[in-house]
Length: 292
Image 1 (tube, rainbow, N blue to C red):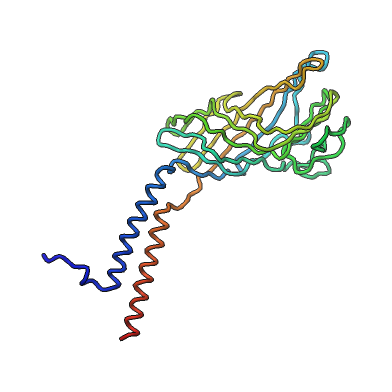
Image 2 (image 1 turned 60 degrees about the vertical axis):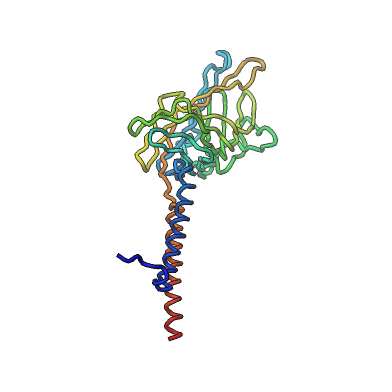
């Protein structure tokens, strides 16, 4: 059988042949680039299924009221939805948090002062402690409004944004993975309160979310949807003057997110060069027809 020579191929065929060679080279290049980061997938958080509930427990001496737990200032003002995006390193046998996640807390939909959603007391002047008691003013667009009537406490939390802290990979057992030992952290947010014991306003940046510290947190991954439960508690010393006052922060909820599909670079390159090759053939055919 006689071998075909490139010189016997029409100009359009030669152009298309060169295009195919370029496509193959570019596809191989982009494919090699994508393999290194193929495990890190972008996820979009489903706000309709994702939520966070916030409660604080204040440990006072018996003479000062003992244990005081906060409750919603208005029905539902201790729970609100979550939205944003996450980046997760998904491997065949493990899952790990990757950098870059931003999990925002929505303005609370529960009507507050004046029937306005997310309008909770006290007003946070940021630069100084809020006025009170009694609580005066409101902070609009808040995430949480809490009260502890036993000590006359009214508190507000707003602008809360969390991220996932990269940690050790979590083994996948079937569709499940254990979040124990994993952590999130606040990257934005403030809280303010007034009470019979005093008033305060402060940043909550750095406040942790310790997954699995209040109850088991077993996440699931079905190849499309990721579910991360939240059972977190941590305790901090508020003041030691004139005696120790500890506050525990209890967070419960879940994050449900769906992987966001992104076209492979090689696919886009193939499509682009394919179109260029076809247009080149059409252009040459038109020139040939005109010259004839």
